[in-house]
Image (cartoon, rainbow, N blue to C red; front, side, top):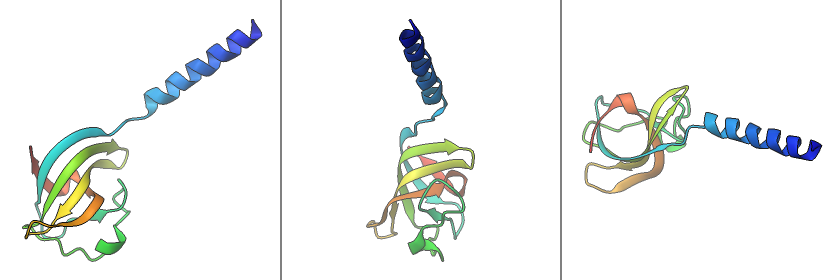
Length: 105
């Protein structure tokens, strides 16, 4: 009986932990920078500037192709690839701040 109760409490504990974790939402968006100098991030945190983009020179002609939307305590972020004005992928697997870009499906 004691074993059954312990297993039950462990199971209930796992359910409550999993319910608190937010999974990223899968989205496919094409985005264009609103301003001249949006942040390119290495994680979904506004302070985690990508090492290769500390002095971002991303202008309004650059694009971002998003595959995931992350909503956390620091804001709303998109995960995807940064595309140059010529159409080439410049940075794979980076994050942007959603409010700095205008996006459409």
